[in-house]
Amino acid sequence: MINISKINTVFLFELIIVFNAITNVTDIYKCVIPTAHRALEFFNQIEGNVNYRELLQKHPEAYQAGSVYPDAFYQGICEQGKCHEVSEDSHWTPFLKTSINYIREVYPQPWDKSAQRLVAFLFGIASHMVSDVSWHSLNIDQGFLKAMGEVDFYGSYAEAHQTGDFGGDVLSRYELNFDYLEAKWYIPVKDLFNIYNLYYGKTIIEENTITHCTYILFLEMYGESLGIDKLHSTYASKSPFLVERFQEYFLGGVDDMAYWSTNIFHLISFMLDNGTSDCYLPENPIFIQCNTERREKNIKLRKHWQKNEFDGDFTPSVMRADGADNITVDSGVVFQMNSWAKGSVLFVSNVMDAMNMNFTVQYPNHITSPSTSYFVSSPYARLGWAMVTADLNGDGHGDLVVGAPGYSTLGHVQIGRVFIVYGLASGLPPAKMDLDKDADVVLEGYENSGRFGSSLAVLDFNLDGHLDVAVGAPSVGSQYLRYTGSV
Image (cartoon, rainbow, N blue to C red):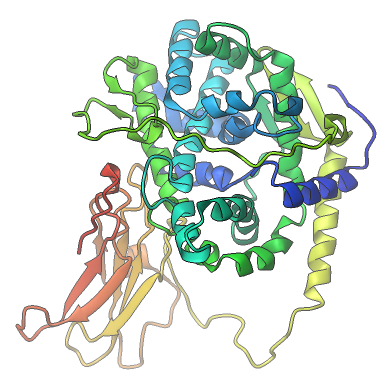
């Protein structure tokens, strides 16, 4: 256990927030941590003797660290920016393929703890890879930042990129629950060193550089966790599109990135057990296919994109603090926050929240708690995204039709559901209701990421005298990047 230097942790974190906000050195979250978390929620894959879902749940400190890792060397304060290309290369399929082949050769199954954590780390990296593709519109059209530029920045992708990357961090912190955020990371330093040597055919990055730059990333992550959400109004005013479409945008929103992460998890599971020879492995990871006919598509060479860099003389040593420990283990290092440092973060965050409460306007006549509620057990279901009322059963009473386009079950991601609750003479049933169990009618989509239930309409379409329900599933075809939709 190594305590590096004596700098007040709260001051350090505030410094990091200001530093990131001014320079956009790196976009720590860019939704990658919540995306990876959401992807694991319904991922279910067993290949051979390995239950990959259980493996990832067993090693969250490695999985979460991997989901952020590819950006570690973009920072100008990481070795003065000399390892920028290492981060660039860590985003693409050749690095993924090299890593899989390395694991298969060095760690035969059954895997020990070190191998399991390396695998979990690699899954996190893969989630980051495909998330970047759809978020940044890399070799695809209509990705999130491209659309954001067209809508809010007069077609300027560069301005959308500058606002969207850090703004995505801000919005993530403002809108999403981060209770699952790990207080420690595991970095398989020795394995990464070996993988890079295989990838490049020579040593171009040392173990201590990997450790140092990921340590900076770890501290920045916790720096952002302190009050970054307070910048929400600033970034909301810059881009209404970012606020309104952040989670549900069809190509590069958080839900879509989670779907593509789950998709590549299945492919990695297959390749770890069967090798890479039966898979189509173009440079862009979103186009990887295994055991299927190769897609007839001209795949462009990868489109290099640059993170915003800081070119000043900001000394890396200022990022080190007594608030985080660096613990060397068998084949890697563990970074973890000291208990007093976590307490400092919680204290300052609570103080800031309390200060904000003083400015909250109270409306005593407003209803603050519902008389009843309808709910489902599936997280991220987006229940109530679309609603319509009509007398569907012809009893003279209004019935409720509710869409939940994000509804998922284990192994079936964002298939979507629609629930129908029949009304009574007194209105809708007043009791709290689990719609999965108690709804009068349940309709379910048939395709992963189809988002069945995104829109609803009730009309007598076939003119038979009875009302019909039309349900929109706008993301049907997403697995082929077509998003043709279906009704």
